[in-house]
Length: 262
Image (cartoon, rainbow, N blue to C red; front, side, top):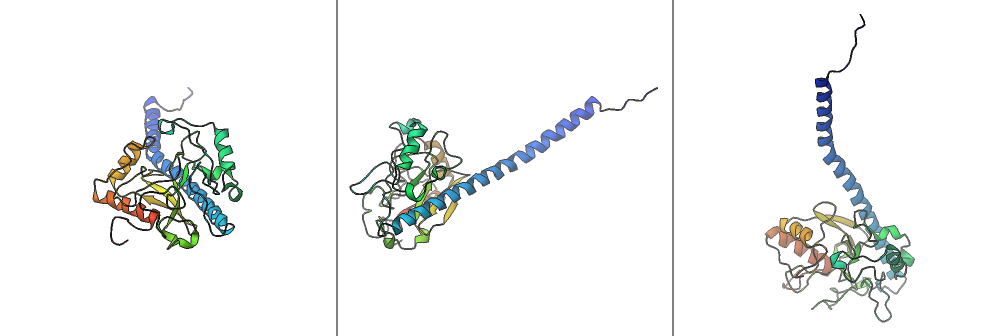
């Protein structure tokens, strides 16, 4: 009599259960590793773009590029053309070809000709530009900001370039530059929540960082308000949330416009 060997149904079910448990354990780790890789790519994009931003100033008598995305000034071409649609807050997008053409027509493109660098790997699908210049870096002027060393036109005006932000990863394309109040203890644009509970920025000395938000209210507000900017005058509700706001305001403006000191 031939003896046949094989797995019983119970043994097969046990093996399947073990495999399912291993997958459940490993998937979060794999997701974190994948996200870490995308964060590294985003930081590299920001570093490359900031080096181009520095090169532009070096070749233009120290004047930094117009940070108003899609908005030219007299004798100042914007760093990129208009990549945003009229009803961008509701999810409307321009055709990808039109966005790429706007990037190529921007003042920064001769110094940064790789179109893929203008977009974070985790940005919204269909948007070719996910980075914005900070208001203070020759972007849109806000109330009380046209002060030497606060709103910047030339690199020589920047004090402590290691602490002054140039680009930020918003994750989607928005008009003009990234806004945060100077004279008020409030947010203007929503704090981006990117690559985990934080955001990525580059700085005037050429380096880039990922910031992790401390306040749960910062994270909640950033996630709830993206693609809408309702109100535009958000005050934190926790001490940690205020620490996030102050950090962003100092990185943008070099100080807090509503206090005696920095």
